[in-house]
Image (cartoon, rainbow, N blue to C red):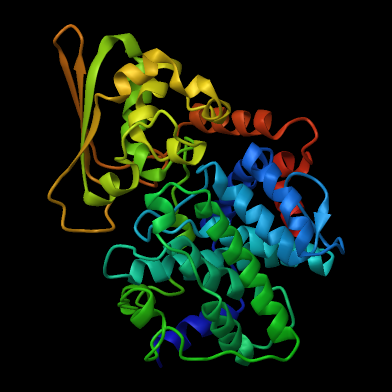
Length: 432
């Protein structure tokens, strides 16, 4: 059996999730919807809400900011909302924000149907996240295309297909059309462009579109992972055995990390340590400089310098400003990413003295280990080894940290947010 066939069989199979996997899926859906509700009320998302009026008018699926839109448009908006604050869960080994695309697509599909059983939704999300993460695990080099979108669209489409009457022998068509729609480049990340969450949004919409086309009787190419013009040849080299060796026995959703802070995941190793130092009494005025020694991916993703005219999207991916914010406030508040508050003199003074030093790690996808060195104004030095990023399976958030994130998400979402998003997220997701 080919690796592609094995993945398609897994995608279409009936799954009874182990209790621990089910609990992880529930927890991650709750985290994803909370972050998405916060993102849906951001200034960037509100601009997008106006723009999606051009995509259609028949109300069929719910938006995380309230109201309804056609299913593909709802998937587009919700995918953007989930990722736009950089607060969404990520499989670190895969470097894939699989929950973002899969959750947006599955929720739109469930709402379009008019509601579906919650266990079906849980199995669909777990399977879709598994496949999207699995493609990242199989990658043998660093990203050139934006993997959360290119791998995400395939996992999301196959997950959404599970909520329909599409027979197993047509899942190859779903995967084929999803691959045909795959897009997203790391240039958006290099430039810290708002196109980054738009690429997540586009993948979620493409997933819904692929499913709808197959339901209508259309076909797609079949050998889209291993073929001569398939994913492994055109998007990035894959060693699919890395993934398929554990397919169906290792549930990748249980490996996904939650992001404690609304910033690029690559910043969380340093920010986790700085938050701990803040709780121990260290303050912005005590610090003369910060050096982070980290794998190449960290420098590539968040090692960019402070810019006086930077956008909110840039700031979320800039450790130079995130570190002073944490040392001043003990929290990263998305409300501060707009306007002059981000450029307070005390923040800017330290921003120029924060540096990311790339170490010799040969793994282009590694996020750890790291080492942070904090120079104090009194001449002292604080040095901490970072074996794992805060929020990962190896370094989970405390109950207090989780509650703080959830509370901030609820505040940002506003009083008009659907209460089920926070109080019964699975029911909201399934429209049940």
